[in-house]
Image (cartoon, rainbow, N blue to C red; front, side):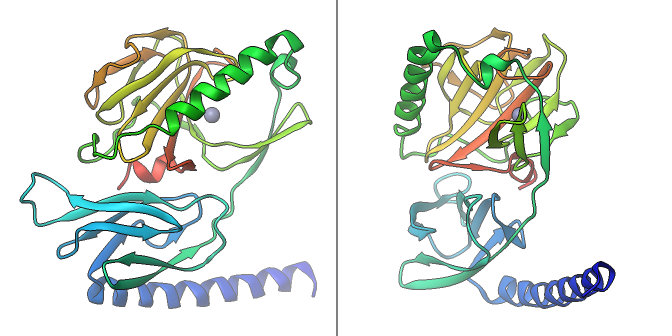
Length: 282
Ligand SMILES: [Zn+2]
């Protein structure tokens, strides 16, 4: 098939699939005891499940989640914040709550590819930094394994800075034509010294300089949901400190593996990095 007709064929299939999904989406929203956003769901997305009738533990993509009152304890709305790992293949996945199994459609999203040039010490770290890098990896592992079961976040998540988003989540990157990685966060334009704020309430678990991340703040929001803020030039919080949504936590910078000053913002749910832009819209 020549490229032009292949493209037409692709568009025809994509449009047909889109129609089916839209109709199915409406039916599901009306009939299901659990609703969710975003719709359609895609690999890499955070997902907010909502129910007016069901609460308690549930299973989703092999992980335990918990439907809890969205507001005060006698709230009639129950929510669970979860996600879809970037490597999840498109298909229908069961959300199991009580004796109900609800099929949830996950579609595939194509992510862009980009090439980046950085200081070579971030692609081939000098040998005498190996111990530091290993210790920092252990620290992150420990922190990410320790989140409290309770919900520390409240309501919606807010952008950590009011500036424009420059580089999206999920881009496959090549550093100096060599190291391949996936961009596991969202970049915001931020001149060095810009104020960075907590996306939601929680506990500061890490606030220190790291080799690759540069100045790093990690906030634990409970339920194994973390937000990460990288390349910072100055810390305004200490490890162990409780923090409220919107409170200043740091000043942005150009530390660690960067091409210039900006804020890198990541969202981690039960070990999976999720697309921050969608979380900020839920
Ligand atoms: Zn980034």
